[in-house]
Figure: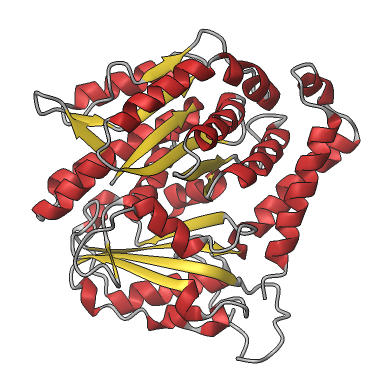
Length: 440
């Protein structure tokens, strides 16, 4: 089944390009014909001349980034975007969520829905949609939220996964916390699952693990794309009987978001290292899984700096340690050599999970013997846990402090967002925060 990707705003389009580039390279390098065919069917369609064309719609209110993405894809010679699969204007949203959601989104609804419809009709079987966007600016967050709402209206039974890039904590946009609050609150009502990458975390990976001295947006986007690709490429579940997933988004959602109050997903991958070091490194499944499990329970985002002192509480005891990261559900994806010999039982420990869901229901694993993106062995963990609780709580707190002083509120009111809309969004996210805090 095929996934239609909707790239929104500068960040969504740049990350989307990096993702398709990795997916195409991996499908070419894969030595298994069935794997490559499944990957291409999922993310690309072929023209009459045999060219691979991404199943994607590119949307931005300014043309520069889209033009760059389309040009770069065409020059690589391995894949490209569709000639008429993109839409842009000459005027941006001014980093204002309300301008994107209330003005630009409705104004261009018909043309965007038509672009999406064309991509859907090219799919033999539609798995669902992945909307890629930032939460900080105006187009990605505002127009992205509006487009997600349109997808839910037009395709009510299709799965929708929103991939969000979380802004740097030091601030890229003065009103980024407002935009983030409004985006998340609305998407919580529309999306089946929300997969989040934090820029601060990815930046540290680039610096400390990849040893990049002068980190660019391309470097950051490359790390995000690598992790996303390791989640989305074909893999076999325990009950797949040797057949690659028929509906990858459906299986992802059903594995991780069993309760509508919990939709926030985080992702981490091991190992990650400079490409020049991969050929000289050897990894074992027990070591990779041991590190990844400790990263999960201590809520450490990278292999470096893992807190090995954090332990899950004994069975039946009260969970009072705030440093322990409780999970609702986890999905482990293993790729590479000897993958079927990897023992994942340590992730089935009931102590890792909330008490009202059995670990057999809460934990799932997918495996593929095909190495991914030059790594002989790699493991990715997609987790619905308390991992995003702290940054979410911090973001809502900063937005609330600004709202209490009425800072910049008039910039949103003039485009149609009222103070009551802000209050509703705060209430919605405070309920989400409370629910994740109560995971025990």
